[in-house]
Length: 550
Ligand SMILES: Cc1cc2nc3c(=O)[nH]c(=O)nc-3n(C[C@H](O)[C@H](O)[C@H](O)COP(=O)(O)OP(=O)(O)OC[C@H]3O[C@@H](n4cnc5c(N)ncnc54)[C@H](O)[C@@H]3O)c2cc1C
Image (spheres, rainbow, N blue to C red):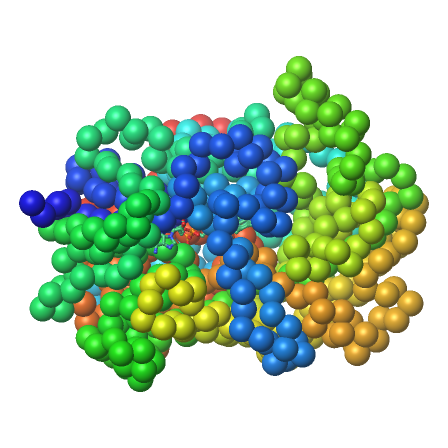
């Protein structure tokens, strides 16, 4: 007996969960195949669990980059989720959409196409708003009634407050809403959680449908390839938890949402991609799409790490008494550092032209913190890390298949900071935020800036520091980009359909023509929501109630 569904969604991450849930709500029978684990685990719910995710957990898959020639051959990790909810189950929960110009830029790239639904800010805002359940804001930009719980930080460490004040003392405005009319300034982020519990795509969109017979979620189901007959996607083949191969069929569509590193791999394994590359691995090429796996964009992140002159901030390994106290405070009163994912404050600035559109995002983390491949270089003590991120990088990388075997991880080369414009911006951002450490009221709490060396802020010294420490801000995007029919590297049309194959769409971050300025979880959900509209014919409208008129 063939197992048949209306639609099959491949990958139960941020975008896949939203797409599946919205298709079910529109009346379809949907199979959601997720390679990873269940999202029900206390470590995933608790905001500080993020540090375990970054540094070694079964809920993650650690892609290693190819040696990066411009980083003296260095390889770095790109951790990606391996759990229902995807990135939204493991991330730092910062709620960010990017700015209207990000989407207006996509709209221009796609304009004039047949059947173009529009990707401008006015087209995407109803999706952001309909999902959002904000605990402070309700206005033309924000909604308080949606299923994705968005909250002010549950706990703010003193180091974060001093950082916010120091950057104000440097002349930046205080921003109370980075998703508001202007991104510029310094302030506290909002988070996708409530009362210390994560609001992932699995919690917000899948859990409410748990008893709905139209939705079937299969965990530990790693898809191997899309099955294509007569240029139409008819289903997929996956391996289940016993490593048995299974094939399932879609009467409607197959929707790929396995993330920017795996979605292009699955397309290439199915014969859709650059012909020479696909054939090199003995795979029959069904559609020659040279853009599959190209245009990999990620936000490069470089840290400034300091040591505090007191027991400020959160973490020092072996300080069992403090951890016990934090745990007890949370258990007894529901308050304290356990409500914090580490990052609480941040900034959007343009260090080269202070009043122009921000080019840099900063994250303030009151911990001596690096990724697992560099962490051993730092002392185990209390301190503050500020990471600086280029928000509209020009550097581009790629994803390729290593072989025809789906079990082999794809080859990934993000080329972070390879474009000189990105390197320039990163140098200026490091200089700018180093000054924050030397500005009151932060400077009085800092014993020492550990990296980079504040005594040598020459371009050469900062470049050396960047080469050693640049890494992903966890936002790989763009590897199957939407584009116009005039764009030979476009993989998808403006309705997320894979060119040359019927009934096949992509709804994860790989669809992005360019990356948004800021974190990417909410944008991934927005793309998933739009995809469901395209498939079902439903139109998501700006939610009511609208704010009351004065
Ligand atoms: C450590 C970390 C911290 C982050 N912090 C933030 C933050 O604070 N704020 C923010 O906005 N963004 C953050 N992000 C980024 C954000 O979470 C991601 O950009 C977003 O989740 C991407 O959504 P997606 O749907 O494209 O992919 P994902 O959410 O990664 O979903 C892909 C899903 O596909 C599954 N999958 C993979 N291969 C297969 C296969 N072969 N078969 C079936 N399933 C498969 C994966 O297990 C995963 O669940 C962070 C990400 C990480 C990793």
